[in-house]
Length: 158
Image 1 (cartoon, helix red, strand yellow):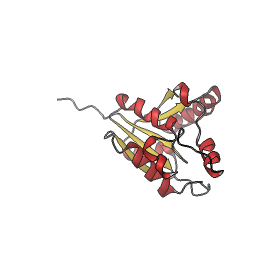
Image 2 (spheres, helix red, strand yellow):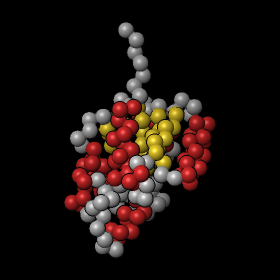
Image 3 (cartoon, one colour):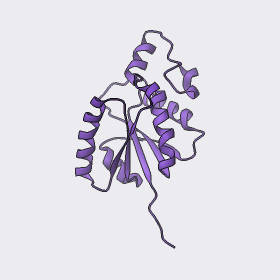
């Protein structure tokens, strides 16, 4: 019997907060991978709007019903985290050409750091192209309704 390596993807981000666009990327990636680890990059030098605990809770609530997902927190290089969890793919969503240019450069650097880890890009669904965590934070900060922008599982937290 042959043993094939599990296809594990890491979807890294700050998720400050998660948006419906992030949620859609993960759901669309699930048929492609055995497991998707949604990984919060914890950069202690950057101030975040939502605490690490809040962001982790929002991810746990959003993906609780999807058994092929896992939530994690990491510090340092994404490729090092991937290696530590046995992931061979980095999952990234693309909204625009500028996203592609930015993400392409990071993917090439990651590949030079560890050529066994491949970056996979999924295009954002058209209805979520304008959804960014920055927009959600700004609307929330000034008392606006973010219900249409965040996953249904967490709308009650806002």
